[in-house]
Amino acid sequence: MKWLLGYLAGLCVLTLIVCEAIALPTFSKAFYSHEFDKYGVPETISVEKNELMRVTSEMLDYMRGRRGDLNVPSVVAGQEREFFNQREKDHMVDVYKLFEIGFRVRNIAFWSLLFLILLMVFLKIRVSFILARCCREIVAGFLILSAILAGIIAIDFDRAFTVFHLIFFSNDLWQLNPATDLLVNIVPIGFFTDIAIFIGALFLVFSAVIIIIATVCIRKMSAVERYPDAAVSRRRRLK
Image 1: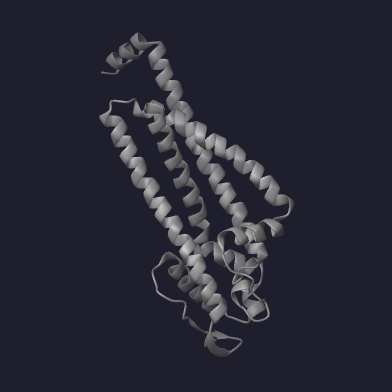
Image 2: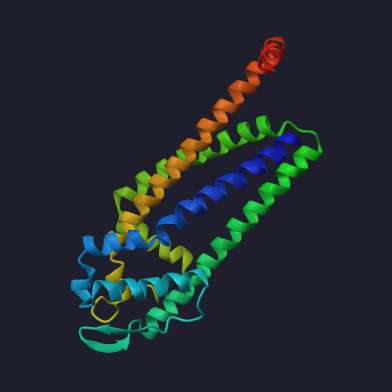
């Protein structure tokens, strides 16, 4: 029972760090600004950088569910127009739904983790030890699988990009035309390569932190179990 609860809690921790690794760069305006400069996006679509950042801010708010539509008036090549055409708006509806699911999964994982910890406390289970062991095993195992997947993706990122969209989107709205659709120009394939690397690096850092903290906790608690008298004496000296 205690290990089942521990592994479920570990899965919640893994879900949280995956969601955060994805969300941080996805909703970072600084990241978009850097990528726009890197790929010369303002020059490509003939939009001022400040105007492009304003549009991007509106788009990110839409993806977060903070606004109900993507009707964003803008100035492109000196002409006033809607920045996003209907096909782009329809595709972004699908993107919004995908992130909505992600936010729900993150929230469920957070509250489930809290519930599991309280349940283990109620059942007088050694929460720190069980949680540390299970989190370390689950995160380390997923890290290995992620490394294998990253290697496969790196071999042919374009193919992986296509497969991703075929899995998560039920239509072909994501197949945009650079000649008519601005969305595909502000987030070119290089953008997705960079954000994938960023997400992978964040996940690696988060995983390393979890594994290190868990390992330290396990060693300390194991030492206390092996030498209980020494631990008691130490506590007395500190008093």
